[in-house]
Length: 165
View 1 (tube, helix red, strand yellow):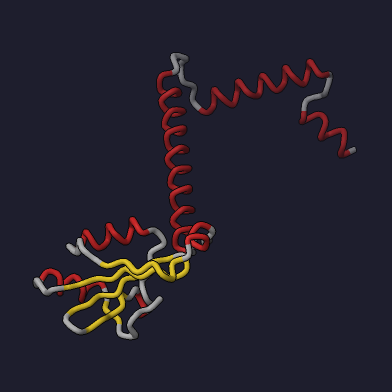
View 2 (cartoon, rainbow, N blue to C red; view 1 turned 30 degrees about the vertical axis):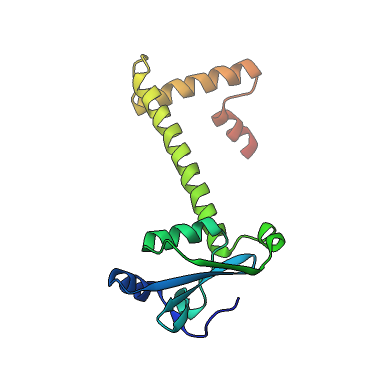
């Protein structure tokens, strides 16, 4: 990307635009991404991301939205070094992969929450009378004994006594 070695950050650019300075912009394509060179007077500065590296945009529409939100609606585009093929096969960067994973987890959590709430509501709406813990345990013990008797297996307490002998 043909950029200036001098950089300008978003905050400084925002203050210049808000102060009414005549700010020009040149959108420069390089490889599969786009960068921005800001021109103020005779000074050219590359828009920098955090840590001073040039800020790049994979999508031209995102870049155009960014400039429009700042109030820069006219700019020059230099696509001489932009490569459409590399833009099409560009692998997602780490941030977009992480954002995608966060969204997947959020959707899974929302789906689980909806399912859980449905289960709770179904239980609340169930017309059968509720049982306390002792009643539920007694019913399950009776069912277990009936199944063991039907299967011809001795109850668990007698089976343990025989195994110990």
